[in-house]
Image (cartoon, rainbow, N blue to C red; front, top):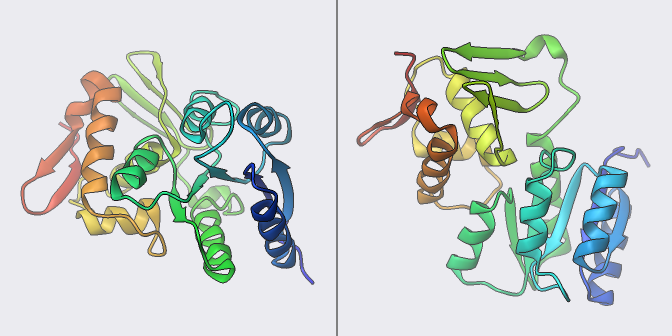
Length: 233
């Protein structure tokens, strides 16, 4: 069997869930790391640098949302995509996870086959194997500078801490070259067609992105009834 070469960190305190995901991920060709609580997950993510993290919300001692916040606030783990895994099915819980920077959200109970497909979909969006020639390395406009290869953004010379989803949104708006992108287009490009999120999630992330960009947030324009664009004044 051909192995993918991708490392997946699974964080859950339920032994049955860990064993189930460990088995199915290995069967699909992934290398698997396991953690049972938040501190262990954070340490493993920093030391082993997985390609994706599957993170349960209901963890002992430290909730998954707090683990996610810490991962997204650390330079070494900020760019690792995260799939939230939880027994909670309310829409508000999904929105909270996505607002904190998660790329996808899977509710227990789930189909192992669907789970593997969702993992592959997220990894595809964050594929590191594209040749460098296909990517613009840097963008600069007045006070804002974006380093695409290092996932770094500065405004007025100060570093801006963006989640991986916020960085992806900014990248897609910049790549559009001033063209308007609809919410559906941004969902497809930043989250992927296989990710089940609602269009208003885009509005939430754009609002947070503008706030973090401070003075440079003005470049992201809302085009009523159409979507968003990055306008180079």
